[in-house]
Length: 370
Image (tube, rainbow, N blue to C red; front, side, top):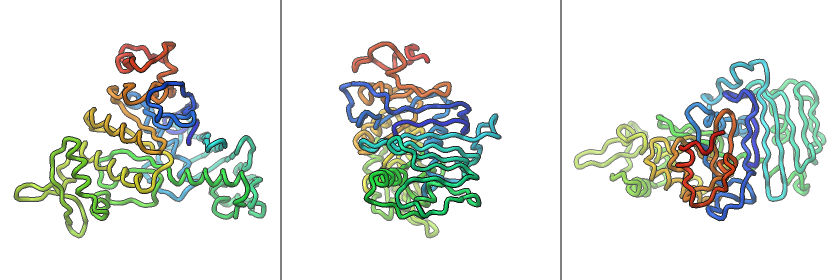
């Protein structure tokens, strides 16, 4: 699981911003939101423009150079902070796998231009790389690798992953493989007004979500979900100009749902599309930006309840203060993002927060001013 993350000089993050998922308390309610002392299900609240979306992009930056998973072009612009264009962006990740700790840090001049990399496993540095200098590694199985990467901007760690035959019996290498597997199963997505969803990681290509639902024979299941969400409709698979899609069925006609569906309905369909994949394959870390865009607050709460049941580390961002309730979450798993700080509500007040406290009311009254 992701334990801690730091970023500096990336997009809106001019100075160092820290996202600590290990600052948990001993609340007895909503225990499924914490696993092994780390936040397993978290919600980040914040005003427009505070950096919630950029945080998701920052956390998933390592997908761009350590995996072959999708990293869309439209996420690659305006990489460095506008005032620090001649310096490097800095990232630091701490992951926990059972009793093992993986610490990975690097600097970049641009998305595809790595200036340095450092990898520590259980406190021992096993990979060191600075652009222009030889790669250094103590990983068993990587001893014969070429160490001069001067003519390549490839990640040193990705280079080792792709070219070394690492000793599978070595404890350090076993932890490293768990790290790589975690990265391959990370997923970021957000709702957009396009037929093809914006996402990072997890898969390697872009899929038409409506055609995918048709191909998997999930149209009736989608209809049931929409009906349960209060959207009374009848759906059927259709095909237009050779492209599969889904239509709303009316008395005398069927209309492509993409043409007339509300933004909230499209957002729910996008969630359903990814939820089906998570059911069949699972994920390591799921980050949904503005997960409840255009949702009614009751539907947003229902989605949170569903996500709490899956065995995936989940981070959501939202503006909806109605979700600030101990019925859904707990104060150490709800974060306020403001002034480049991400702080759990449990650390924003000296008051001993209990289940009966109305967190939303306290927030609106200024009890959590940072």
